[in-house]
Amino acid sequence: MMNILNKVNIIGGAIMTALAAVLGRYWFLFAGFLLFNIIDWLTGWAKSSMQGESSSSIGAKGAMKKVGYWVVIGTAFFIGFSFEEMGEVIGVNLVFMDYLGWFVLANYLVNEIRSVLENLVEMDVDVPAFLVKGLQVTSEKLEARAKEEEEER
Image 1: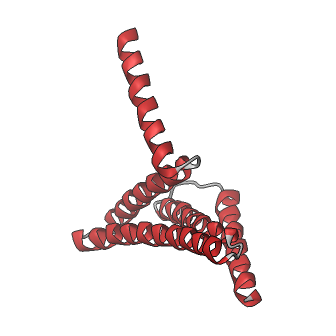
Image 2: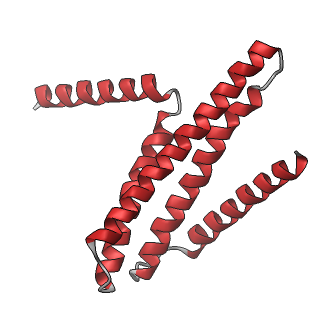
Image 3: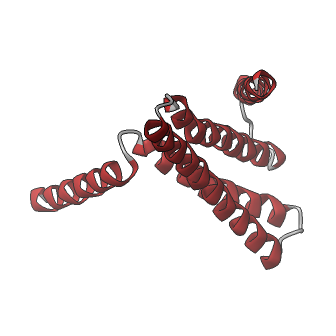
C-alpha cells in the first residue's frame, strides 16, 4: 500500500512540476480554467439532454468554443509579452502589457464559472444566490475596468 502511495506522490509531483515549468508560478489558474471548461461543457450537455435539445453538433460547437477561448488567452499573453519585449528594445517601459493575458484569463475564468452555475440552476440544482450574485458583480467590475482603460486611451 505504501509503495502505491509513493508512486502516486511521485507522479503527482512530476505533473505539478511540469505544469509549473510550462505555465509558470500560477499554473493552477490555467488548470482551473481547463477544469471549468470541461465542467461547463458537461453541465451544458446534461442541461440540454434534460431539456431534450441534445445533439452532437451543438456539443461540437461548444467544444470548439472552448478551444477558441484558449487561442484568445494564448494570443493575449503573446501580445503582452511581445509588447513588453519591444518596449525594452525601444527604451519604453511597457511592463504593464503583462497584465493583458491575466486580464483575459480572469474574464474567461469568471465567465466559465458563471456558465457552470447557470447550467446547474437550469438543472434545478440549488445554487446559493450569493455565489451567482458575487460572480455577476465580479464580471460587471471587470467589464467596467476594461471600459475605463479603453476610455483612458
